[in-house]
Amino acid sequence: MSGHSVVAGTTCLLTAGAGADVTGSSTDGFFVDDCRHLSRLVLRVPGPPLRVLRGDPGSTVYAPDTGRHADAPYAMVRRRRVLPGRLIESLELTSFITTPQTIDLGYELAADFADQFELRSARTFDKSDAIRGVDSSGGRLIWSYARRGFTRATTVDPVPAAELTGDGLRWSVPLPPRESVTLEVTVSASPPADPAGPATAGRVPAVARDDLARCVRQGLADLDALSMPAPGVPGAVVPAAGAPWFLTVFGRDSLLTSLFAVHHRPGLAAGTLRALAAAQGRVTDESRVEEPGKIIHETRRGELATTGEVPYGRYYGSVDATPLFLMLLAAYHEVTGDDRLAGELERAARAAVGWMLGPGGLTSGYLRYRTDLPGLVHHCWKDSADSIVFADGTPAAGPIAVAEAQAYAYRGLLGAARLAARVWDDPAWSATLTATAAALRDRFAADFRLPDGFVALALDAHGAAVDAPASNAGHVLWCGLLDDDWAATVAGRLARDDFFSGWGVRTLAAGQVPYHPLSYHRGGVWPHDTAITVAGLAAAGHRAEAAAIADGLLAAASYTEGRLPEVMTGLARERGCGPVPYPHSCSPQAWAAAAPLLLLTL
Image (cartoon, rainbow, N blue to C red; front, side, top):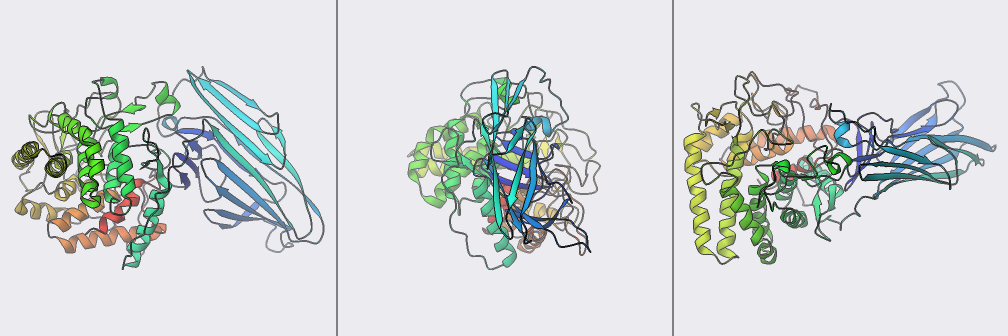
């Protein structure tokens, strides 16, 4: 997504640029827990329009645009913003002349309480039964909203006192000669966002390459900003998936992010594991795709989730979060040696294996998901409705078994087997899990190998191999599911130019009927997907190709000050030009921020 975001846990300010106004478009605002608490924040100063002299993330400097040959500006305005769970905006007015002035200025303000699902989709919701109010008494502005038991309020406190109306505020400020005066507005949400969790910041690793070091520093800073309190686990933190639309717990995203970062932010892994274990499926409920032992896909606290108009309040539509839970638990124990957490989560791990072997479908073949359930069509990381297609563009019919979910299952079973032997004192179960993983590997080799030697994207409801060449094969390489000869063939195919855009790995290889460079999952380039493929190539012995793709990813980051976006377009790299942004990419995004950390492990 284009624009500028400031993030603190589940709170986000999104504007068109650093220091820009909030205009009420569908892509800006002050958000708390999926609700837009401020839809308009427009600075108004009579006279010549203000011109931006410098726009930095924390401080924007303006001066009246008096024209090239007119007198120098009479004053300067410095606009600062901080976001410690609420929005605090200060204006510092500085005089440059020797006579007193009175400056009239103010804000246009509004709070529409739009739900993020309204703003990012074409679907409309009938909210004619909502009760809205605005109160400008008592020296503050308060907007209120209530609908079907969902209540929210936004409060604006000006300092010093201002003239208030239902749609803004105004000051008349005496400005002494060559002095400065500071004004401030504080915007608070009710109920407030959860207080920020304990700091996750830790050591930034020393990296020899400057481009990688910069990307790692920015990625760790973004992970720290995205860290939010772990639901149901006091004192723990988890990575929110991304700003502005995914500032919540996402099973898959939080697990992969924590896995990439486990060497550098192990506390994120511990918090994620505990939070997801606390929300693990307990019953069978098709309305939210819940099954016993299944790891949750996402939780939401916004209006439409609370009222049940979207199914994502507590939603389990993910086929891969459950094996990823086992992968992260095993990796966390390998890195930290934390027997205590492994023991605490033994029951959750056994329940996760139980889901995989039971409702998940692994005992009879593969992890599969239905495509006719509430919410998402596809329950894999490529969850767009049009993402799983044959090379001729025909959509795959469900139930579907995607390749990477089987690879995660293989690695998750082996990780659980190691824990069963080392921590849980159950060698018999360890042997059973190891044998189950080996049988899965044999089945996969028989069913997912395409005639050209590549890995099928999925198997459809009839067992047909979905033959569109896709980056999912990189995840399979990363998890070690392929024998050496097959891995070498797949690695060589992933390194070709139809996959590698020059910036990263396309989600679908170019040249096929369903490929589109501006598609979210049928041609776009995702940094986390690319980093996984790089790790898979390196594991298969294709280190030169892995290094070339990693170089492309780092070159892309150099155009955005070291921050990798959620996704880029699949358009090929051109000499002297940066990557073409994907128009709706979120930033910062947790697994994109963590992607450089995976490159450090190569």
